[in-house]
Length: 291
Ligand code: 5RP
Image (tube, rainbow, N blue to C red; front, side, top):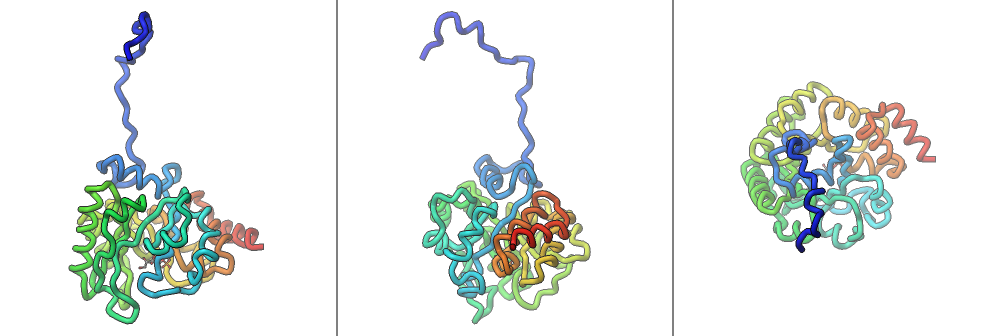
C-alpha cells in the first residue's frame, strides 16, 4: 500500500545510528543460527543464563524407576517449576499435556537395557519426529571409554548434522555408565570430545576436585546430572558448587523426584541455580515448602 501523501517526510531512519546486535548470552553459541539460539533460549533462562532441566528419561533403559512409576501423578506436579523436561517421546505423547509452556529435550538414543551392555546404543528417533514434537533439543548418550565408544560418538555426530539442518541443538550426555573413573581428567576428555565434534551443550557429572577446569576447557555450556539419590542438603551443595565452578545448570532427576518432597526440592534447586542462593538457605526453603 502506498504511503499516504505527506507522511514520507515524518519518517525517521536514524541514519546516524548503527544497527546493533546483542551478543547471544550462552557460552560458545553466538555463531549458531537463529532457530537454534531461540530453542537454546527456551532451555536456558536468558536472565540467569542457567537452566533447571528435570530429567525423567530413565525408563528408556531401566523401566519404571523409583519415583517415575506414575509420571502423571508424580511428575506433572513438578512441571511448573522446571525450565525444561528431558524425556522420551513415549512419555511425552502419552502423558505430558501438549499445552505445556516448558521446553522439551527429547531422548533420541536408545536400544539397550540394564540387562545388557549399556553403551551399545543406536539412534532411536528420526529427526522428523523431533520437529513434529517441537523439541528444543535432542539428547544422545556418548560413552567415552565405553565398549561402543566410536558408535556412540557417531550417533552424536549424526544427530548434530541432522539438528543443524533443522535448527535443533544436540545435548551430548556423557560419562554415564558403569565402571567409569569419574575425575576431572576424564570429564575434561569426555566433554571436550563432544564439544569438538559439534554438540551444542553437554551433560556430565560433577566432581568436587577441579570441576572448574572441566567447564573452562569445554567451549559450550555444561549441565550436571544429579546422580544417585543423596540427602537433600548434599544435593543442593553439589548443585551450588557446580554452578560456582562454571556449570550452566542442572539436568537433575533422582535427587528431585526421589526426594521426600519433590515439589519443595525442585524449588530449592531453582534457588541455587537461578538465584545463586546458598545451599543452606535453599535447604531452609526446602524445609519450609515441605511443611
Ligand atoms: C541417563 C540420563 C538421565 O537423564 C540422567 O543421568 C539422570 O539424571 P539423574 O542422574 O539426576 O537421576 O541421561 O542416561
